Length: 333
Image 1 (cartoon, rainbow, N blue to C red):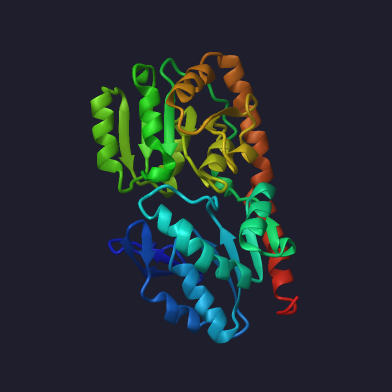
Image 2 (cartoon, rainbow, N blue to C red):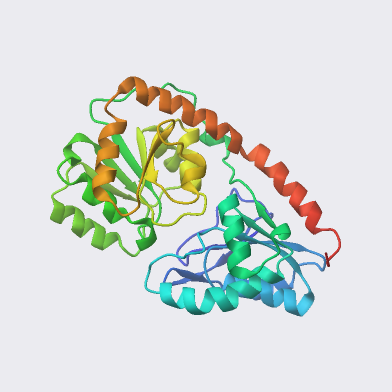
């Protein structure tokens, strides 16, 4: 596996030779990995690359390897093709997506998306043969599954996990908490370029009991899920959020926006509640509703764990093994 690490990051000593982390630079929500082209070109001929498409530059590098060496690759889309709304949004929509991403997807041996809705959208928008587009689930590691019975405390603990970036719309959560923040303990796990702005907004709204935790991984992240009562995801765009799946595996009912990807795993009224994106009033109502009935809350918790079983990595990995075998077949189909 070739992946990145931040300039200040260190390689986890527990990682084996199967994982190679390359030094990366961060610019405008895009990672620049100087050593990636050389690392890809040194791969043995006949290799199949599983390309995770969640930003610019890396897809172009893999596409170049395909042109130069006929290297086959799977393009795995991790975002809704309508794109995020950060400052580069217009450039992505008008240049990168119709020109660069279109070529990357059309040249891929297979394209992976998360839902059937996304599969049809990619086929229509980019002219990719729908027979080469596969809707495949995200997978959750076994460590996230928790069978403990959840009981709502007097002051429920809300949890957000994700980047502090425009597309995650954390501002909507802060606005939703205005006037009711004292009824919850709220923890925001993650960092990003909006952190200072969100802290300022929180103070301006007079929010109480809110903590900006910063980035968490490994045992820290597991602890954050275990000690929470409700996960909140106010995103404007998602592919299929791994955070949602991890929370459901932990037995956390969720309040999330009613968007593609979320609708696949959040069954309104069964394991959580869905609200329109960008509607703080609706989000506030859902937060109060989900804690109003302790018995219903427990039923949602049990339903969350039950649905998450479908997304255990052991099951999902079999689907990917079958896809890899398909791609290793004839280069031209």
